[in-house]
Length: 75
Image: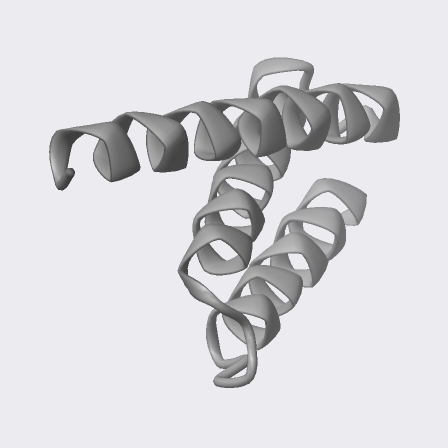
């Protein structure tokens, strides 16, 4: 049950971040990457919050790198 609560909390956080209309394109990509990373880290570590935090950090970096790639491609 505890795992379900954590997973639901991260899902709600991800939905809340996705709904932020005032974020620019780069911020949205970083936030989405962090949210996806947090959920993935939580699942891969069996519900450990450290896994979610590490996943969020890695996902944020990945989202930032994706944004840089997209900006270079569109020039």
